[in-house]
Image (cartoon, rainbow, N blue to C red):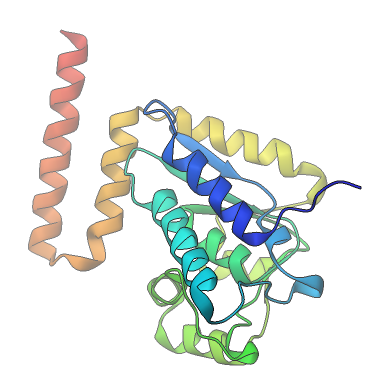
Length: 220
């Protein structure tokens, strides 16, 4: 019988892979994040309490940051089933999410006696607003794939049979954008909520100037 990876071992492996990514890697696809959920979509998080649990949480936190912090790296989570717990946290840490039509997202932590972690709370509030995020967290009601698309939690919802092809097309579209333009755009959008209107315009002008300077330098 083959060895079934544990959540701590998966976290450690992901942390190592993301840490050692070459600088020329522009897109990371995290497949099958739903498999990090428990049976029937229940959270399969690390045990509460203890040194090991704290160490596992720290590793998952690093993984989440590595997926989102680099402006020149775009991350895509692929969900093909009920996604909760660490799987959902990982999906929400990614820049974009692709769901199959039968997938769902579930905030089950409260019903299991826990609170959202790994940046889930902030991402939810930024994406769907405070009231809706609170309702999703406290009720644990699954968000269907169509609703996830409507709420902005999913970038694409596709038939299961087309999943690989659609993810491939999305990756190709992202790679078609010049690296410096992609990085500047991600940085602009990621920081937009924290800036005033004046600061946003200044940041946009600075980013455009850097892109134009890079373009001119490449052409020279």
